[in-house]
Length: 496
Image 1 (cartoon, rainbow, N blue to C red):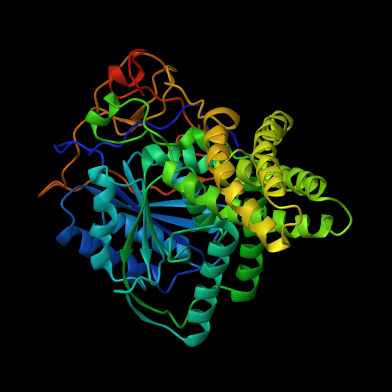
Image 2: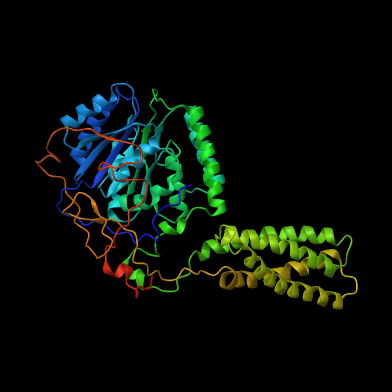
């Protein structure tokens, strides 16, 4: 799993400012492999749609994945006929490799891709990218599984798609509804720090990117789409499904072991400038309460089972102490991972030691309750003992959550003062984003699509790229160090 993204969290999202400039706002990538038949009609139809409906400058990029038919010649012809069309040639196969390479080399602030068969209705394209332009979301995906979507496809593909998404929900706790729809978009500043963390170069690329983004707290916008299955699709279902399951295992393992630096692509609380003055806002309190209650309920059942077993050969006090000790270790480990999101082995021994202190407090409460019960009755019924222990454990649970949150697993993410905050700055005087190491530069305006002038003039050329290389030959699959947009983004007095 790649972990070489630049340090520092992403800044708050902002609406791309409107205005005139030469850089396209949207770069739509069409990855192809041996698509000589469908490529021409696809690009012509997409180009016509964008010309008629999209209000800003755009580019269509054909990413040829080492095709062996006449696809490269078709791409060159389309590039010669339409100024907004460009073509890249990669000498290795893989949709994920093509998207990573072209997106990383693109200068457009909004990056998208769609399959060459255009199964998705193009009327969903503007709703797909609008939340990214406005600053509302980080990524956007088309969903064929939304209630208002209209889909025409066979029962076999329907079953496979829904089963795959159920696997993602059950194994990776994914909340997005459709990982495989070939209709997605991402902000370029997000892509710069997210793509180096994505390892897959094939069909699992989409899923891995979405899972990492969601776990990091990025906002994913879903657009219901109308979708008609392509009966001539060349996707090998069995091989793709096998590779996807391997990818699910790999990503799940990386998330479980904490090898992904998700904090590097996290957003601050609130994207409204007024929210930056809010201090001491509890982070994830509702989610932590739900997780703690679930873990607590399971731990209580586990504790009662252990107590009943130990009670067969020991007194009530010894059985209570042993059952509480074992369940406390399991409870601390579960809350550490599931409730408070602490991953990896770092600090595990200290957390267990602190958990044992909390266990001691719980033991005092429950043991005291049993002592009071035995003082009141010389031979209390087993059901009465259990009832008293449940009541005592409820009181201990409230205290345990407060101690866990404030002492064992406190939120130590203080205000960041690192001047290397990562954000892509849009420069109106240059077709690329600024990568200066110091100083501050205001973002340029959002370019409008010229009314009567083509996007670019000059001779037709097809740029050949190796996997992991940009158009200028300088990209090496690593995130660029970019400068802050606003001075106060890294002001030491910033309460964030």
